[in-house]
Image (cartoon, rainbow, N blue to C red):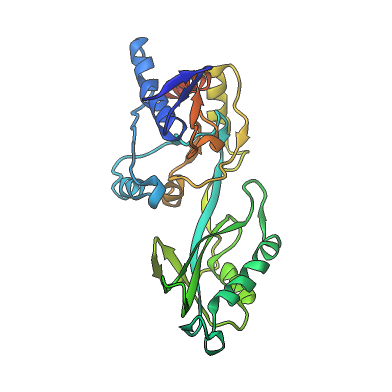
Length: 293
């Protein structure tokens, strides 16, 4: 059960995503309790599997049979108005070698050395990639390393690393070129990462995107002004560092913005919490959006 201490609701999922979800659900109830109704139909979507590919959001957008004027994401933004986030590209980079008993390394080609050489160059090389003017620079995190053996006395035949790129400026082809340059002459293969599975790469020069609405958009100004009337202050314009289900909605032409209580850095932490004052402010903002939009 959650605990309230020092003005914060403390408990697993309080910030991501139970607190924002409660605000969205109760915003319509606040209007109805006051004898008001939203200006138009409101659809609340509590989609599933956002953390593992977004199956719920994908299903929703594929089966839409009504027009959508605006999507407000409930991902925590500390009550700022999030204009977007970078896209995701995850790759399995596999280095190939030759297995042998660990006591005879001269008979093996140990792929771990090729991986080590690659990783030692990666951070500096990524710093030279393109930067989005609002969403920021391209980043990469090597997250999972695997080998083909579980025996400590066997040199692996292959080793692979999952590379998690976040970008709104680079393409599959530009990232593939970067990886190939750093891997050099070492025997290697590159594939999309879908969990533990590897999928063939596509040939694309299109920028990898999440979602983004420019700050000078009339839609942004309209939403920002409505939130200001509801809360007494116009929310600052920001963007998410992490990815959201908005990346599945924007490619299908849906206008997406993020607005919710909760600090981004509190998500997925052992001491997760959310400020009740932030929730109440966000509730007023959401209710005003329903009145005006």
